[in-house]
Image 1 (tube, helix red, strand yellow):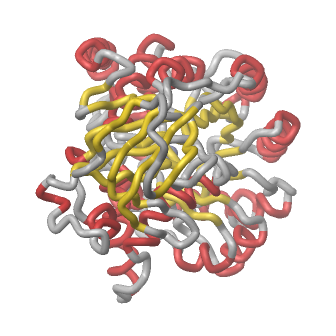
Image 2 (cartoon, rainbow, N blue to C red):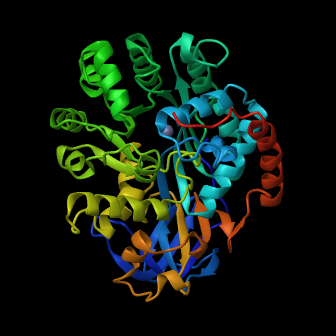
Length: 442
Ligand SMILES: [Zn+2]
């Protein structure tokens, strides 16, 4: 059932960073009715509406975080200073002991952190996704939630992962803000049958597939040693790729693989911070992927490998690493970075007609960003996009709406009690940290 939303609301006289087809930044009003934008521009009708004074704020489309594991909020800092193999060794050991209750506590904390940093939609990959879905339902964010699928002999899930995913899709079908989907973990734990089963399940349910792909050289080389093919070529040849798919990372690609991903119009979650921190060694070929036809957005990955969920921070890092790596300061401009964090992320999810910009008819998912914050100075229409991409602090995000519902107001979470969420998350983190395996070099 579509959410009827709260009473009509007008946000008056704000600096509107519309992200419309002309990328207009204009002073004007937003009118929200039934959870959607019904007026964007000067002189919105005020009848029957709560009027919010927007002077002193930029209205910015909600950010789309295209890859993460939100319930890992309890594990921030648990496996620092290791490469992916060492990181996964610790994480898989901790994961094996997790309970649905601590996943819920972690998901609530992670969702709150995302809302407080202006993210209104996220794409997740984990198990116990019912707990994540509960957190999404309670706290008012939009969640695209992928049930992790692995070969039955490689999982810590009870039962067969693909069947668990099928049941999860059935339980959340039709929810307005919880979009269940299928998430094969990666080539290192999924064989041909698992990939094709995931594809078929997603297609039959009319939903997305989300997966890790070509994150490290080791992953690529081990797959090549096993199958004779690089992961992208192998997945293409077994007939896996299709519409509505989002791959995370894609750091290690050949020109041929880029062309294949472009041909399939694949969604790509670029996770610059996570790749840098885990020392993936390369830089995802974002420019070539976009030129080839792939749809690139930004993902934070989990706070165990980032260690933040801030899309403001992710824009900054993604821009810097591409510019430096390519000896070309013109690539990934501020405007392109904001596109990746909003519209392009929405497009990768197949949701560009619903979210990603401030345009009439779209969901009212947006943030009000304080123009008097030091990191926004000088707060001029022609500089606001640059500030969002390169300097704005999460602390400047004052108020956040999802579907017209104020989920954050004056930097306070409105849909949940942060002090309780935090206390429960700290308590749930205790046993995971006290029983963690000894760290070390991998
Ligand atoms: Zn990941």
